[in-house]
Length: 76
Image 1 (cartoon, rainbow, N blue to C red):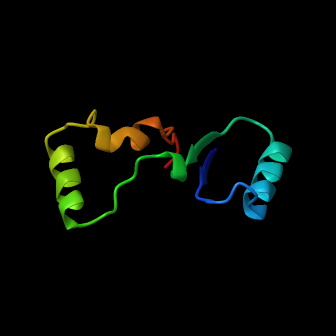
Image 2 (cartoon, rainbow, N blue to C red):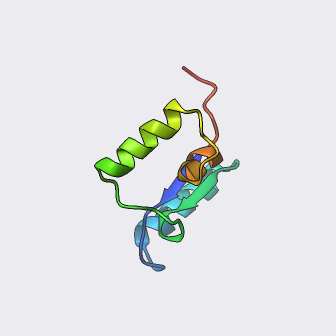
């Protein structure tokens, strides 16, 4: 399971509820806190860079750091 935390407040009721539900479900989950990541605004230049990196097979570029941390789905 993957939790993407996009809450900008430490006292978020949504985050508190989400963490409670995940605790009740049990198991393991990966967490990404968007406010702790170095994200760039998406524009046409960044889209072009992304396409070029993928076409060149440069998936180890720092641009792909979050994607590399995500688990792959075994399903269809």
